[in-house]
Length: 75
Image (cartoon, rainbow, N blue to C red; front, top):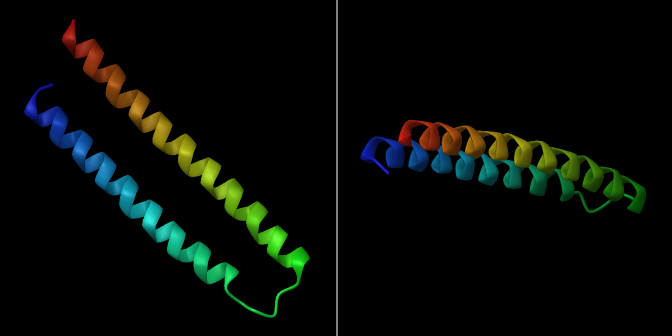
């Protein structure tokens, strides 16, 4: 894999990691209130689950594009 592609992949994973950490911090602040009911907690967990799935799809699409362009450039 050429150096520029490794650099691009490194930047991509760095951005994904940063976004993941930011989302984890947001999630922790959303779930922290001690006076919430169990129903509220489950609603927040459902929302967090949906957000996580959206992030996974975003990451998967990015990985697929990078690998597809790498393989296409190899031929």
